[in-house]
Length: 111
Image (cartoon, rainbow, N blue to C red; front, side, top):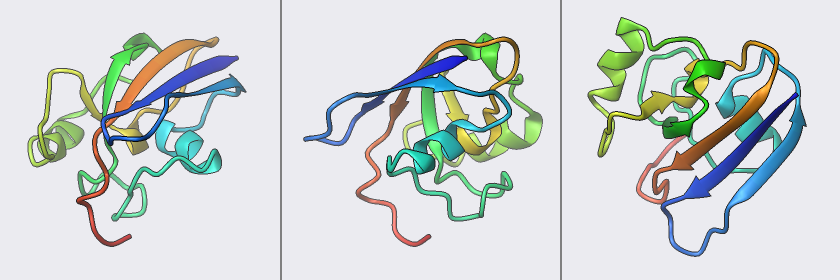
């Protein structure tokens, strides 16, 4: 089982912890299933950077970053060393804890 703690850069949003998660779902899917706003303009196919997140801990629980994902992260707003795309971070392994910070989504338009 997995636990993901979501933190937010957007003012006024409190951290949310989601427990008892199964594997084989992406961080983006977990966010959407739990009514957490994380934009995804390309439909979860690694063709944009709107589901950009900061994976603060738990990187060993998701696949390594691909060259394609890295190319789109370079286009994201305020990329960091911990930047990933939520659609590409699929939970794998036997479970554990992840901490994710979602950048301010208020400036992203469309869906």
